[in-house]
Image 1 (cartoon, rainbow, N blue to C red):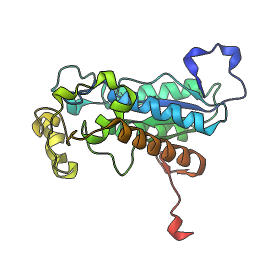
Image 2 (cartoon, helix red, strand yellow; image 1 turned 90 degrees about the vertical axis):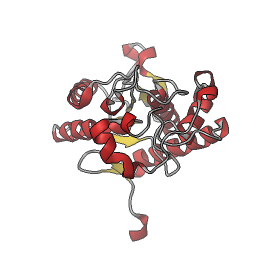
Image 3 (spheres, rainbow, N blue to C red; image 1 turned 90 degrees about the horizontal axis):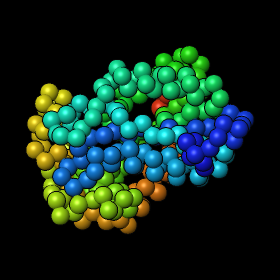
Length: 238
């Protein structure tokens, strides 16, 4: 695995695969930094590229995403769906001049609509691009136990546990209509969807490894759906 930004152009040969981390700059409760999603996307992309061992590069991350649902909180920087889609389209077009497969590693749910639309268009234009999510069954909604554990593992100095507190712990499916109309602030004044209590760096390391395993498996064995998302075979039918 090599960081793309740290090499000179003669070092790039034979159309290498490129992993592009996609995150956000948005509130993550009173205790986590604004770049939490980006930090997670970068860590997963780096871990996956290292595991793949095929000369993959990790591109500089896209910090700015679509985070309008968090706009009520200071610090949030959102470029919206249309701008994010266009940025991804132009980056993939640029990468396609010299790269092999492009894998976008996304760590913010609010990016999915624009990401899926961009990759769908790029695949229609015959570019070799797919995407995967930093997600496991154990991930909670936002700034709760899982993300706090991940950041305690990745960047412990950026976590202020003295400010950590529970937010709205209802399932996101129950809150979604309110979030769509009023943003996260409408359902959680502190911006947390979940409860960070009990978070540990050890749990963060475990979840990160699980995320990396999932992304690697999707790259190696998955198949892109019509929007370019890497899906795993249904082994129950094998």
